[in-house]
Amino acid sequence: MPEADNQRTDTNIQLGLSQLEMPLADVPQPEQRLKRLRKPRNLPRTEIPLFTQRPYEIMATGAPVISATQAYLKSPDWNEYEAGRLYFQKPFGKKRYIEFYILNKQEHQPEFIASQAEREILDRYGVMAARLHAVFATYAASQTEPWKESFVLRGSELIKILQVYKTKKLTKSQKLKAIADLAWVVGTLGAVIHWYEGELNLCVRERSLLWIVSVQEYTQPNLLDEADEICEVTIRVQPGLWTYNFLNFERERQRKALYQYGFIPKQLFDLDPYRQKLATSLVLYIIQNSRAHASGVYTIESLLSSVLPHCELQQAVNSYQYGWKLKERVDEALLVLKEKVGIGIEFDDETYPMWLRPAWAVPDELSCLSTRERNQRLLGVRKLPDNYIKNHLFPALLTFSLPELIQEHLDEFESRKFDKAKRISKDKTRNSCPPGKVSTSESVKISPQTIRATLISELPKPRELTGAMVKQARTASRMSQREVARAMGMSQSWVRDIENDWQDKPIPHEHALKLGTLLGLL
Image (cartoon, rainbow, N blue to C red; front, side, top):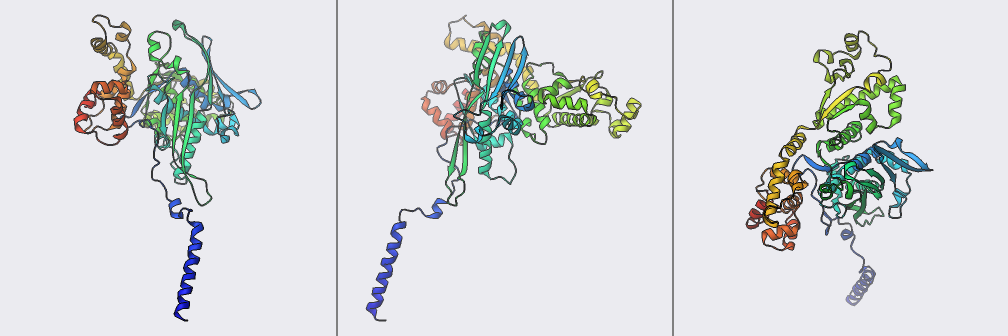
């Protein structure tokens, strides 16, 4: 082929290629579209994960928290007020009660929730929703005015706290979607509270959501016609208006509202909510009810009726086989409470005889025997008495004591209440009040600030101070960023930058020493 023809052919090929390339010039390259982000950027500021510094956290308790837990756990006990619409009522005596409703038909609810029946939502999410409800109550307890303040949680951190969706069959995106759906479900619980509070002269009748939840999902497009992959979820929670009357420290001091708190152990979330459902339910109820039920004494019937639907208890009475299975479940759950959570259990000698107790709670010489042999030795017959579930097991008395570490702190707060609060009152008086004008209410009632300051002082002293630790200590001490900035001689934006930009990094030494001393961390 002549040289001129070759050049002409090359020129035509080049022109053809350039014409093919031009229409594709604006289309991103596939490898760029398929690239995955390791971590989404520009996430809102989120709260520090629970149990990062100690194995327990302060938690809001009180009637709305406790009764909402029971509402989640006792789904068959919900009643219909019209076709397909349910309500759950928990009476507290003295004309006091709280009613709960599932508000899944609201305009702001996503389609997948609105399309589900209320009974289906309760049956599917019950114990899981109760655990997330406890997490929300824990974060709310650290707020100064929870009815005004919201908190933001990260989905990946919630998965770790709740210790759920551990299976390798689910991708990270599927796990994040599941936790987002669960948060939406908890946000559907509404309450009507009718409350009288004796000496407080408090009468409340209000309607509000327990938790106002909004969810942000951060996704990345997928070229393969598959659903977009979720790389992170943030959940913003605004505590409902019920906190103004049931989680209000300042108004409690004026005897116009309530402020009730307790402690929740990390071991609770170590339990498998599916395989150890009864144990999980019992721990939630006992921990949340510990202030209102300080004696820790329960009958088996009162304990089970708080976390199991009435139909299960009735079936245990009517069916010998089902009753025996329920007793086995109770025995196993009590062992989990004792061994896994550290809750002390004491059996009443009179109402809880040896033949009725779990095998692990009897002497070694009896525990090694079969059930029939043990009954023969203790009862004189191999068969258990007729109607023993109703006549013996249900009336049996148990005494629960909180985990040792938590009980020590509660006892310490009681014994140190006067001296600690008095010293804080004196410090405040020197800085802001004329001599001799100390509020008597501050000197006799321990505040949440005092509780958190005590918890901070008992933490191990860190070698390095990070922004996350500063934020946690400041929040626990109930100090604002402005107050810290004033004490440091800096601006409020400087404190904000320390908490955000240095969240996971050591703060420079020249600032760390003064900050650590101010917040009781060094």
